[in-house]
Image 1 (tube, helix red, strand yellow):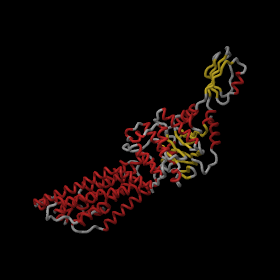
Image 2 (cartoon, rainbow over the protein chains, first blue to last red):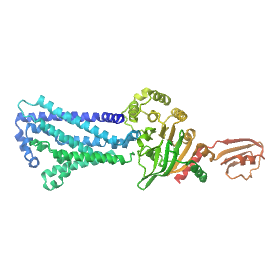
Image 3 (cartoon, rainbow over the protein chains, first blue to last red):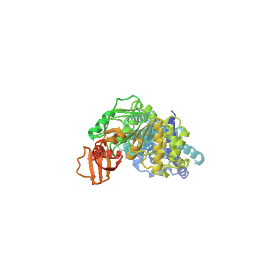
Image 4 (cartoon, rainbow over the protein chains, first blue to last red):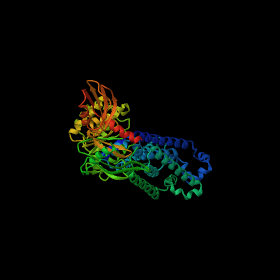
Length: 272
Length: 317
């Protein structure tokens, strides 16, 4: 059991700079949003801001639009803003394709020439992903609470802790599902650039599919294919709780992805 | 020559021993239509140093990677010290130290981090004293270990690779081109190290392109050609089949119209000097010379390279 722990410790050390940097940046982004929301609140401009929104955005947001145009709505954006989701999915893909990178540079030769079972490589990557997800989302939550405590004006209505925690949990499971998809692709690929590129393109396509389906009815029929479909921040903004169905579907994608990664990696040639 | 080497090969493919350090039977590896290794049979004996030779792409590294279960064979099987490399790979690999052809390690790590990390993965404690001794013999100081790999020269990376392969003192060592990039002093230390390991009963399976090195350190040589075993024999046996250069100096002028026995190639025939290449025993030549006023005879030891290069040339043809 010592050897897997050595590898996990080593891998965490390798990704710590990336994870810490991303965690700090995203925590700062939460604080920035609180400052922006406070500023709009003080100037009473939420209504004007809403009028500036193009009609298709209103159509996409539907009845959650009103909830979004508020102090707590703007603060919540930190958990589903495109840049935040892009960064987190990017991190998931980067960590998911770590084994492919290790094969490519020949590092895997040194690891697996030891009495070290292949399944530990995937298990290690999952542990690194879970720890990284917890670290990044934990820092985002700290950023939100610290920002609200120190920077929010008295009397403004904070987003509920249930809402913020629900967004964070749903986002965490979404990240894990993309990590699993990337790991499954990487387990069958020879090059990280190919695996990462494919997973990235797939993520972009799935994001657009979900986005388009919200405004264009025909796309709705295939939108269920997109993992992003099962992260519904606007419904949560409307007061709906964390959807167990969404979590279950994302959980299934994650389990299938990891299972595929285990199966492919145990059968493949490890050659660079 | 081909017939002779084939008989050498056949004589050497003996019954599979369950505890052989390395036992390969009918091993085949195909990549689509390309056959990298074809029906390879090979047995490495306990305590020997076997040189694994062949041109680039002959299948040496593929075979080594199958032994370490990095690649999965298309057919056949391989075992190390009685443990099947695929079915019982963990036990097999726990008994082997491996030096890859290229040390694929992140360059921001220090040498010590690499050694400690890889020792940690081996799952058994490392004797620091032994590691220190290895360091000393390979000329690798503690200061070197404190430096990051990006500051290492090619030779230093090779030394680090040797250290990580040897540090657990495994009974079997698999070395892929171990002296590539090493300076002459380090090469010499490495050869001494191999000799000591052999005395301790360790088995070494090493690929190399340096034929003089193979001739010096290996007990036997296996030559792969297009994935097939073309030659397997001891260095001494191979040398017997190499033509020796014989120079005969005469005390007075002799006739040059001579008929030589088979296996004698004439390089130069002069009244006072004959230069010949003789394959096999020297007896027939000495019988012939007994009637001549011979002043001196020079016999140049046959070189392994002379035989192996012939094999390599055949592959290119």
